[in-house]
Amino acid sequence: MNATTKDKRVEIAIHNWAPRFVSAGVPLDDFNEVTAAITHWDEWCAVWSKRAAVHEDLGRNALAEGYTLSAAGHLTRASLCYHFGKFMFVHDIDQMRAAHEKVVECRNLALPYLDPPGERVAIPYESRELYGILRRPEGIDTPAVVIMCVGLDSTKEELDVYEDIFLQRGMATLVFDGPGQGEAEYDLPIRGDYEAPVQAVIEYIKSRADLDPERIGIMGVSLGGYYSARAAAFDKRLKACLSFSGPYSWVEIFDGRNELSREAFRVRSHSRTMEEAREKAKTLTLEGAAMNITCPIYIVAGELDRLTPPANAERIAAEVAGPKVLQIVQGGNHVVNNRRYMYQTQAADWMAQQLSVPKT
Image 1 (cartoon, rainbow, N blue to C red):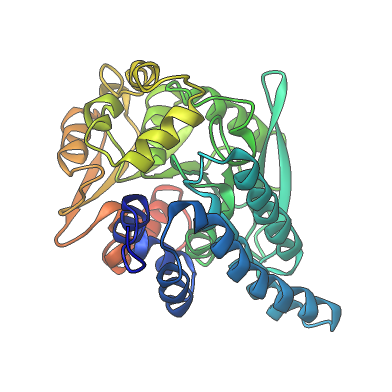
Image 2: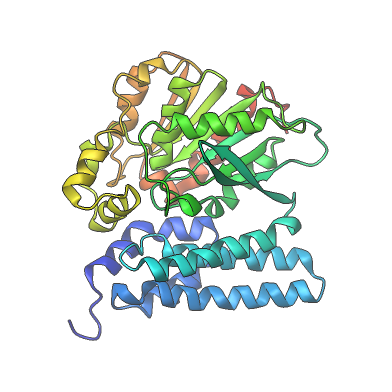
């Protein structure tokens, strides 16, 4: 490999996820400069962490000087950069975990100063706890709440942009790390029956006097789009569902995904071999479940999505029993991160309507 040739894994990360990084809040120049400096995949986490530290220092300095709004912005960007340093770096767990600790630390520092503020919450789950971030819109005593499910390589700290869109429309947001995700990934493997952790989240919502337990929606992104649909099939307390680029059957697209995604699934499903991971992938399916989705569901896919082809969305839509919206975005990539304006606010408006939230 010569000095100007990047290894395959670096190219995969750049070409598959560039729009996601930028639309999530990573500055475009940061993305261009950091990725230009990386040749080998082994460098990925360290170089991104170095850039994240720039934002972290800015945030800590602003916080020390009392400029809390600025601090929240800098620290959120720091968290995102640390996150994208660790998001697929599963071959070096120690380095990945060190970056992950900074993801959580920076976002937690930002939470009190967000508009509206965020609250780190612990959700009882089986014999453990799952950690989430709850944000409530200002001026509403008991708002409707949207549970937010992240995907294979995401964490609760990545969805700040999504949170703000719901919050601006008068809905609370509760994003959490489930089994195989974020703070839970080291101890709890990915599980196909994701309705189990979602049921725990719903019970937590019911325990709070400042949320409306009768108006709960759910959304999910990428593999989270499967999780949200799966939960809606089994828990009728969910009044509406958003599924963005979610697979119908994970094993059916498993071999077609790139090597970073397959390896991330192997590690986060706690599988020893790729063959074992493929067997576990079979448990992530909506076969026999999609037909049980009776709440309204809004399904989005990108026409050009190579990670989760739009046939998955079409199959889910064909089988659900309740009201549905199916949107295949022309020219859209995975989760339509390259054209979020085509569906993101529209889906949030739709969710507000389903949860009886007044128009804004």
